[in-house]
Image 1 (tube, one colour):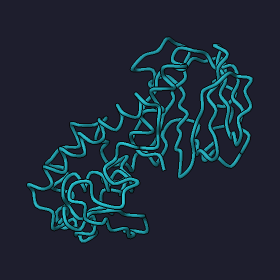
Image 2 (tube, helix red, strand yellow):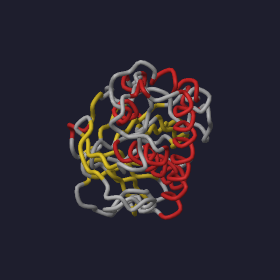
Image 3 (cartoon, one colour):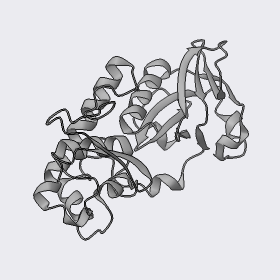
Amino acid sequence: MPELPEVESRRRAIEAAFLGKRLVSFTIYKKNVVKRPESGLQRAIIGMALAHTDRRGKYLILTFGPHAPSRTAHADGFDVTLHFGLFGTMDIAGADTNPVSVCIRLAFDNRKALFLLRWVNLWLGSGVSALGKLGPDPVAEPGTFTPGYLAEVLSGKKATIKQVLMDQSVVAGIGAVYADEVLFQSGILPTRSAGLVSEQEAAMLHRTIDRAMKDAIERTVASGNEDRPFLSLEGRQDCPVCMTPLIRTRVAARRTIYCPSCQH
């Protein structure tokens, strides 16, 4: 599943290609991908420009309006909200291209199109209820995602620390892969009860999340590669620090990798 860094990379690519460009067609090939249609909005935004892009956790928000690009465009624009699910992806190509497994095509007046591929969930209109249930985004909302917030939200929880980090109502944007990464970098076992993480460890985990997310974004944007080759444990059999064989298991029904020697 694409997580915060991959969705942010996609947001930047869309903004670079289409910000200020006008939408000339909006075709939905798989009707079930639209989770909350708003009557007439699909036709209404044709002719409008992409005025603003935003991201909350794993959600991508494209705002269309009649005016020039603006940070306040969402105030009088129309939103298209995307979530890429488990396998959804995208491509930016010539408007006359016919990629495999396209479910949505947004063509712009620069003769390019945004193709949403495989299965992407889409909401038309503002007020998407799922967004209101999200916890703070560690990159977009640093004023809310603070060391104090993280320590408080972990305190007293019996669930594993990995399960809590993957809970989108606690931290928006972290999934199974990046939870493994930040816990390895912090030396914390993913199977440990969140309530047993000390305040000092929570502060270290907060710093690690901040650094790891920003580093992953920059590396993904620079390389255009979403395979995450820079992660510590991906594709390894042994710990890169102590060479102990890595443990592979499942936590909260998600695949989990950790080092039994470096993490406690």
